[in-house]
Image 1: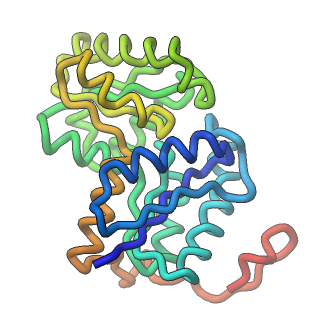
Image 2 (image 1 turned 180 degrees about the vertical axis):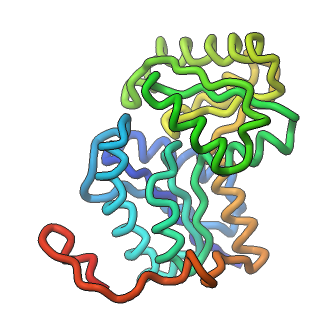
Length: 243
């Protein structure tokens, strides 16, 4: 059986999207086709609530395009999980955010985890999501490396992230580490070797989770909150979102 999973990087940095796609394809089953995309509109990186809000229309446009193309499931590849609820209203198949997937996975391999994220201003967002997803008790700490998203592939940045992950494990006494940015995905194996604990990258975790849900025939419930949005006219820059 061939499944088609669309991995949406909500920012417009194509090099990052390519890296995310490689990580997702590395764990996908042989019969699964992974399409990694960036929206045609939106911020080049997501590092604030403003960025996140303006990334959502592009994410929803990619989901709508995926529905027309017969995509089976979606990954939202940003640790803020932007537009997750709205995407679930649009999509026929399952939609999983990488923060959601990573935190779920972390609680399956240990009783506690630490999150290592990018900028200090995103720390509270990570805590907010841990509470929303029911994992606040398992999250021992959220630590920021204060490296901008688009600089994470630099060797010096990767070294800093690795060292911070090791420090977080010791400081928090946690059983595992959750990488708090899709741009850290390619560092996962390296960080795991250095820390000696399971290190969870949300891109790969979400890819496998979506794949599993699709293979089980499970999709988002349309009863109640995630029912399709009612038909409505949108104006101005959002006129193309009329449905």
